[in-house]
Length: 477
Image (cartoon, rainbow, N blue to C red; front, side, top):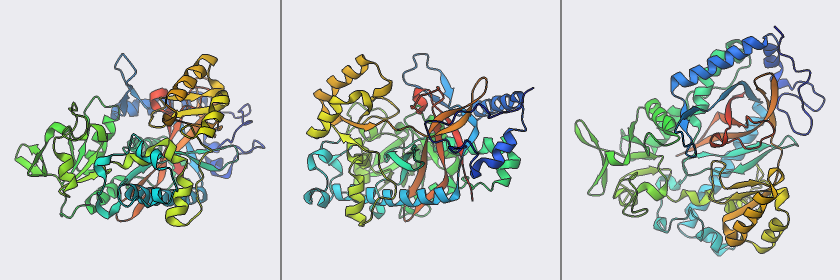
């Protein structure tokens, strides 16, 4: 049986994480490439099959809302990891820390003094019209003045080899459980090379998460619960996994009760006070007394308990205002305004359709741009102009003209590629990177990330809901 061979592997037209422009292996991948080349294709397929079975046995599945069959799927884990040098990672970590500090200062300012609006750094109407802005949060100050305690920033590496921020996720970023379980599986798949490369560990993420949650409460010991929408939510595996790993309670809205503005959960021993809630329920569905009156996912009165300081909600309600893709374009200015620093992790050039000149440019050049809905997620509400039909572009032109505030556009960036196992061979597939930041009394950035991969050849859409998969991310010492 033929051995693994990279002779015909294509590297032109994009940045490849394993090979440079001269088709020579990059230093980070030398030992792993040597290990791969000792395997035959049957062995490689066997390892991939074993990985798929491991995911199923661990229950690493998710639901796709658009799938009428209601079938749970695994987030396919490709066995070839994405490897990042320690130097690159340390530079990323500094940029992420700068970004999350500035964004939290921005959110706190927006709901209190609003200095950034008075000084004209960002248009007032752009912020106040954001779907993530909650007027009910005006005047609130969460513990440590931190609003987004858990964030996942999506990054890409461009043709020039530099990392760029694609978008920020400051409400309920998902995927960290896959990062942790992917690591456990890959350690068993390639144990020798994993040890030789001195890969930085990620296993203590849930310990840091628990410590951060406890640090936000005045009570000791603090009672912690993970609030899930329930078993039909696409990320339910993650909710249950994190609760189990932290030793926290997994609850649904109906398991909680607000009494005299304190939150309790129903247990077999009666009512038990809850001090900190890591919520995976969106703002809109959190409290039917304040937000969506028809919500069955939340708990009546929980927002008032939060407002009075009797329970901590993580992430804080209203943090989603900084998730808005239109506000994303102003983040370099916000970093300069709040920190008096130049941005360490640059944005991608962004056209804001709410601004007349930008909108005209987008309307005239839509077939060359990637258009995104400002409150969209999961790969939905997006148009990739160069890969779309004339009809799809025309449909988006109508949407933009009808509601320009709801759209931004960016030039299409060739995401970097990583060798990926296909049915017959190994080919490059486009990837992005989602590191996770924990922010309480201090900031912790675990040295790893969820690498999402577009499994379809030529595709730039890496979202699991759109058929994407994942890779383990190895950060080297």
